[in-house]
Image 1 (cartoon, rainbow, N blue to C red):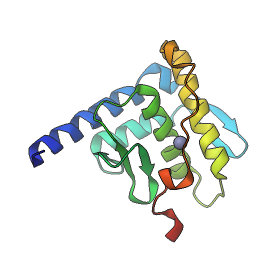
Image 2: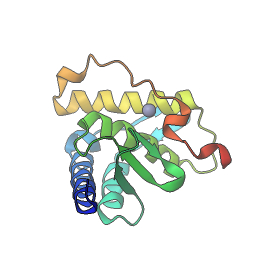
Image 3: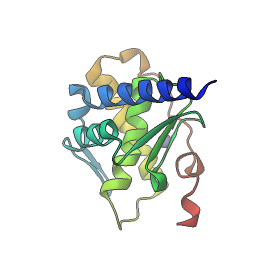
Length: 148
Ligand SMILES: [Zn+2]
């Protein structure tokens, strides 16, 4: 693949993420799960951060995960499912808004799963409700975090 094609795929992914995170179905999602707190204002905040590229980067390739230390989302294609975007964005949001707090991996994963399911309910993507939780490990999401 040429460098130009890579850039265009990355831009397509960025555009898709911004649009999904600005949907009313996203900005309706708010919950507290143990010490992880998701508020409605966080979604447009994250959309803006991705749109401007000042805070969050997106990359096509290297699997589906978010890499908070590098503030980068990775998706294996430029056209991930909407719930997958919500899942990864939730984990980035928790990381960004709970600085200095210890959030157990299970809470991270449960919060991301809850957010993706709420999104599915609110958006009408009901055919995705039967999906099983994405089987993420800590290393999927935070491949570089062990050195932090
Ligand atoms: Zn996950």
